[in-house]
Picture 1 (cartoon, helix red, strand yellow):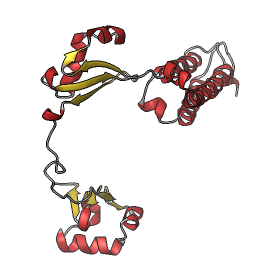
Picture 2: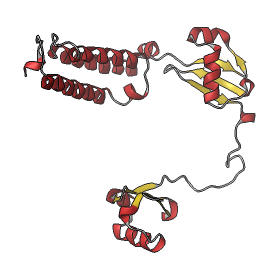
Picture 3: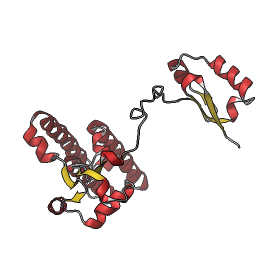
Picture 4: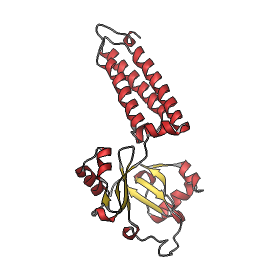
Length: 235
């Protein structure tokens, strides 16, 4: 365990062990932090991500530094992050500090220039984000908001929105997400049980309909009305 502490030099094995330990500590820290810290890099999430990466990186590049201090500091920061997150859930003032309200940058087809300056984004960046959203005319936008996570939410004016089946008063069957029952030649028994079907039923149906073996199937899904769609490993 000497690799945990500062040394004049480390062997290759000791460097590898340091890397493995740092990876596991970071993995555990991110798991404790939760999915929010990964999917939404807001102010608090950005600070913790940068700090943790910096703390764990130093012992991986300097043999004179031990890992005990880095791991201890990482644990303290994770605890402080969770504590701060709980405070934002209980106190509106703290929540507004870390996650301010969305800032309108376009309203009724007009750019709010003062809010662009407040958000510190340029017109070129705004136009680029609108192209990503496939918006070809700013006049079509009812409102566009600069979100705390650094993204732009765009809502078109109702006259430019696509007509839905509800607008046409057309009844459609409820949405049903297909279940993946075969992956790379392996049957997913749990997925079959979720849709109340057996392995024997699946094999028999595939033999009758597709004349193919399970091992030759790359992907098979079952949708509504138990319709099976397959993708073979070889076309």
